[in-house]
Image (cartoon, rainbow, N blue to C red):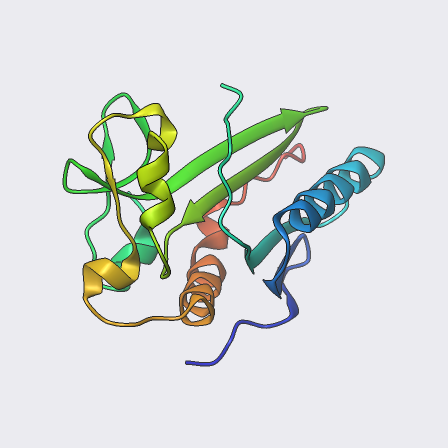
Length: 169
């Protein structure tokens, strides 16, 4: 599968950028820069950043089609955030932040790699949860680049369904 594009426009108001491997702090700084630009110019393009960073533990402040592309049935779990496989296996975490009426959305999808660090914490504050990944669910190797390419294609197909025109009719 080919890697996602470096930077491309889905529509005139949305940019998708593949950043490759980047430090978590650098990705967060980039998000903050994007929000600052959006604060200054509300007409600035919305952006989707696709990236891979080192494992991090994060502390929060307060049905996923991508998995279906890999024949994995992800679901919600009542009262809990994230994406679940069955009732006990969590595959993705979701975060939303709002600053100056501009939202930053993020999700951390476990694609591949070592899940052992999750044994050192109570993931998302939820007891008796086993973290999983696409690789573990499929029982075969898969790369972040392959999953990012599928995600980019999904965004391209689905963005029109999500677009809301706020201009008066």
